[in-house]
Image (cartoon, rainbow, N blue to C red; front, top):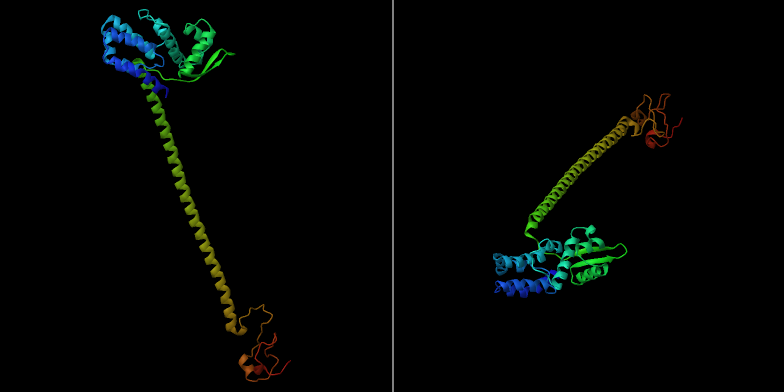
Length: 292
């Protein structure tokens, strides 16, 4: 929002620059650099009539002055003594803009002694007033640490970019893009590894489930086979006349040489006759009431 406000403040000068030439264009530079609320100048710099100032030595000085306000600092202005003199409003604005540049260079440039020296200020009171005016103008978000004599800057407004700074910015962005690509490649590799591990885990789980199912079927088959053998033993017992009971059954019956048919035919019980070992095993009509 602050950048939009600054652009809005610059719009009248851009419109005037379309028809300004020569001295009028130079005066327009002075008016823009001292106007309150006007802190960006690249759009004005791009105007053909302003660029035409470079065609004369006097006009070129005003073009260089506008470049200082666009992306320079007070130190850059002092380094060129041929530039036009600044009035009080221009000087205060250039110092405010220089604060943004110094803040971008690191906290060591934001100590009171360093700022007093860089901005050519006579006292701490004047320095604090300048910083407060920059904060109210939206150029800085900062706090004054009077105990440590330090300006704590959290953010600043953007300034115009000098053409000489563009290659460095491009290199920085390319390096950042390269780092992003490396990170994305690493993430893709990790995702592929996780996918492979998930597929292998699923395959192992399926193989394990198949092995368990096969083992269960094997055990069921063995149990069925064991149960069939037991039934066969009982059946054989029934066929040989023991009524399907095993040898250890207390209700079973042992037979001597005489067969059940002899007994049923009414033959007398001899010493080798069949002996009944359990009560109620033979039919009453075949045995009669004879007891031993």
